[in-house]
Image 1: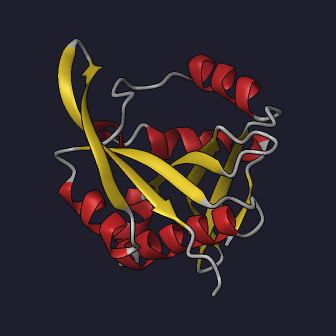
Image 2: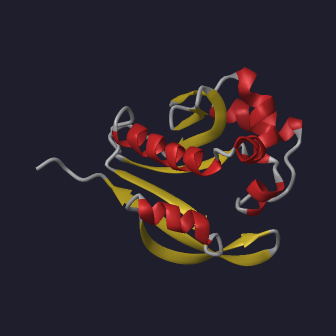
Image 3: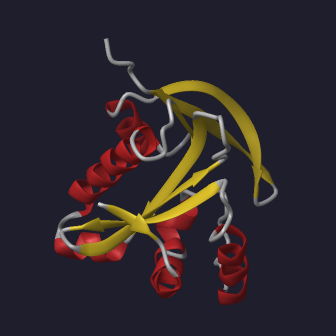
Length: 166
């Protein structure tokens, strides 16, 4: 299940986002401070082009899904996510939650958001995430270098297109 993120979610979202393994798989690798996190939230929470949602797994908050580039008339947007790695690993639910989050994000994109195309980017070396995206039908549509911490890193562009009803 996905629900809109609120001010009360900020502390846990920051803790999850600052997990060393989440940072290692992200385009922002430094530890994010509270002030930086608050500035980000102030910029996104009322932006009609963006959505920040909390994924709930077995009744508990377990991850974050973001959508960006939502514009009137456009049926394409970008997405990203991260999970509560520590909590989900402790409970033994990480893989189930990861799959559930991906399914919920796709359903939300092609359902309530009315999208027909969902795009994202993945660090080329993050084979586990690339494999999961392929499992859900995402195609790898390109590759480019991106500066990450002063060094070029290979990034893979992904895209999923909604199958039209026959």
